[in-house]
Image (cartoon, rainbow, N blue to C red):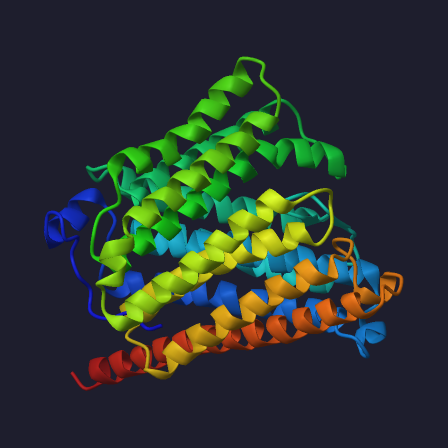
Length: 419
């Protein structure tokens, strides 16, 4: 699903995308952001490898260490849902060197700390973490880097989804800072969950808006401003409601409202997407299908079973694949990358189906779960197959971006030496 040549929004021409702040910055900085994003994605894949093996029938007993599984799960989620998406956001927003350095340092701490400590992992929704100061510092650096990258986007005029995502990112950081101002929670899961509840829900709207920004790029058209505004205003309304005494449910409702506004905006872009170049059209259809499946699975959730990860893997897969297409277009990676994107999309679909069929308890390896018969084995098999395909494709994608960046750096060094 490699995207074709960049096109400006159809409604007002190429200059409109620049005025609205939806187009990534160009040049060396943009390629540097792609490298940081690819590094985060590659490291998240390595952490995910442990999770796939731990849920594969036949070899799962070899990976039955629940504590190690949970540390790997924390690193995978925070690298895939946090570092990778925030680095992609930095690319879209055109952040500078300081923002990239902060994010890179955060990625290193999040990736390395679980390997160097036996500290337990805390199963905090959205952003689990390893109970170690270095890991917490890594997460803080990720948010600091993202906030530093978001500021340039706010300086640009317009009301596009990329700018809206930057505004919501700063809202999430402000909510987290306000929570910390009321006292440090320590290493207690319930207190940490309460601390990150509001900012984590706002971040989901950030990622949904980044998906919409990618759809705009693929379509060469602008999303409806009113729908973008609805997606942005819902989390602000939730924050106001919470300040007035409403319960935490307001953030869940706002996340759903924001996500539905993004879906509606994407559907309104449908005709333009169907007229787009074949690679872009294919990417839009797959990402839209995954996002729609995630919405349906979310509505079907009853309790805390595997429909929950099936739902968010579909949503995350949609955003990830969309960001892949943007990076492929920017870095002009070889045509083979189209097949990597296809493999990632297909693997993610199988993974989601397997999780939905197996309906296992969350956050445990298969070896720690009682036998559940043919349905469970079928679901586990699909999960392992789909997870393996998606994992291999995402890792190959990350390596291809890093390899191209290395070749680009060597060519630049050779050119400089020849002067």
